[in-house]
Length: 407
Image (tube, one colour):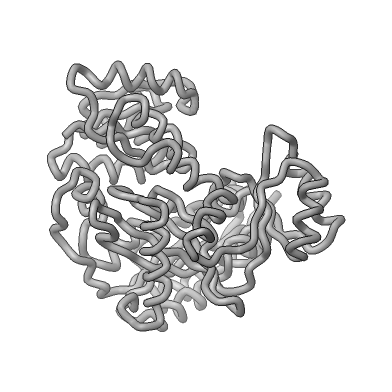
């Protein structure tokens, strides 16, 4: 089977998916933004063919590159893990007759407002939402739904460029920051109070093959706008408890409503006073190398299992649910240059046996902006059989470690 993989070169995460495909016997070709002589050796070794493009979001450039790589037999699958390329992969499938997610369905998985409307028609609870392109439309929705409200790009990624507004003045400022125009619509939705998490799955032709649930502490938006917070992502190993039955059932219904097959999915959800509500779902794996945590927590190769689903082969393993896994990020007290740390020795003494991966930039290194995600600045990843003990240890790290910087 010949698989075309879009942008396998953007980070080491893509290489894990390519390696998974190769491990099940697939031939993999890639289109990326890195010149061939600068590709990571491990990735280069796994690729049967590769074309460098200057603008990977250019549809025609992408199509021409795909035609160069296809050869006489074409491709059997076209895949990507990059949110911005989900629609482009659908476009290539439609143009080349390759089975998989169509461009229409891909757009539905990226357009947050259209997605919610579609899910509501299938009886799935979502926040009230609208796609607006002017102040008039925005204020009309605000009058209907009431404050607080969330504003973000229709096809945004995660919590980037997301604003919570509680008044008309804040709404007007957010609209200015998002540059609302007739050609650039934005998504508005009611603010859903409650705990935030995500439901990830590997989908085959029969439906959900493997699934996972993770929790944010605190929610993404709160973590993004408050530097002092040390945000956590925690993968539960208690998925078989009754308390997770509803989110798993809703996840299955969302997948069926969108007609998703042979893909990874990443569904964000809230649970609070208004019950369980779906925020959005992407036809891609979770970012931030979350799947590495699934590997560690479940004693199996999630990348190989994804690849087996993609090529239409039977599953070989089941997740063990033996461990919970958690990630915590420590932010610098200001942007600038790393000056030093406090509390590291205490953390290694108490949690050292649980920490299986970490990043601690050396003094003198530049800090990274908060909007670059969870895998920048200082972070730790831990594992433990008991979810509650894992959470206590993550809290201890957040309360103990301080990262100092100079401007």
